[in-house]
Length: 130
Image (cartoon, helix red, strand yellow):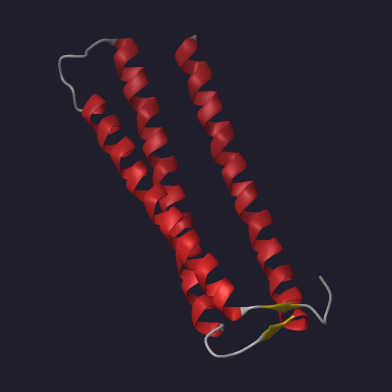
């Protein structure tokens, strides 16, 4: 891509709609996973130290699911904004390249946050195995 590149606004809006639908579906799926985890956590017939440790670990996964939902919601908002910006206008490479820089910076920050949660989940899992 260079400054003279061009994206068809209609195609861009269609791709945004597809991405929004995928993210919303991910959020629905994560909601189902959270429900099942909460059923496990609130099951009182499962008692003992091992079950209590597993339940605590599952609470950490619920926190990760919430973070994923928030990230998806932020992406959905961004895709909706991009759709609004592309209505009736051509978007040239100059604008896209500057926005891409910002998006890559955000992606790096979010990737670091995701890695932090992955490490925390791994640590909790290794503690459970002991």
